[in-house]
Length: 321
Image (tube, rainbow, N blue to C red; front, side, top):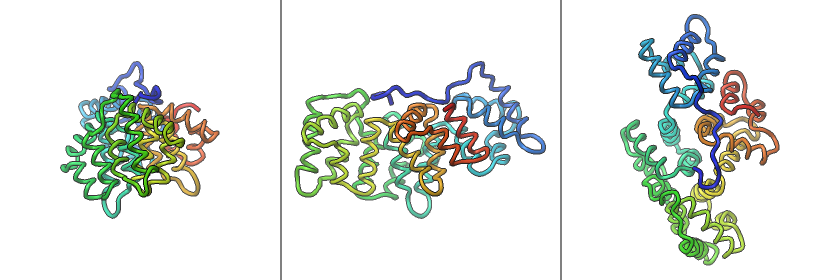
């Protein structure tokens, strides 16, 4: 996602990587009485996902054991959630989050928005294919059974890959689209929601950036201000998430991390999901944005909010202050 900034990860492939040595060191950390949690953190939080997959293969072929099963039997709670999350290929991890958000009573719309809003068409396609493989049912079908109205139509558009490819830009069309958005909201009594979700789900992120600039010229207010007065509920949340991701994805994730730690209690699921899923994409950018927005480092916020091995694992993924 580099249409607006250069993504900088906090977790990069380890140099002088030896999958066999790591596999044996992990077995040593879990063998016998007690577990060396720090050794597990030192290895798995300092390897790329591709390297972790190689470690898992070596663990299986050399030791005849399943690394995830062993980790699950030795670890527990939120620490286990972080480590097991790290062991999953990125799209599988996100599919698991989507499935969890729709399972059982009620639907966690906030998670659906957070996972799907920032994705490009290519990323969405991977998630869609992976979801059906993992759960034996199409993601579109599952989403349709759990959501309704304009929100359902927006999510469906995102996952059927309706968005134009990155780099698709038409300045004249942007002027027209800005006017369509204005006419569908501020420029009339009532709101034509369909115009909003069709443009925001179809145009490339590069195109939307220009559309939002044109909107401001036309209306005198930002697209966010307009949407706030014209839309509500899950549709507003989802569309404003797309707007934020177009303008600056790290800002979107920094805000959500802050919300996860703000006030009484911690939304650990959100905290883990964002740190694990963004660590190899743009977590450094998210950290920088977090510090600028809240005048404290993400590392210090996590240290204050979490404890034990769980805290150490998250801090290892976040990296130095």
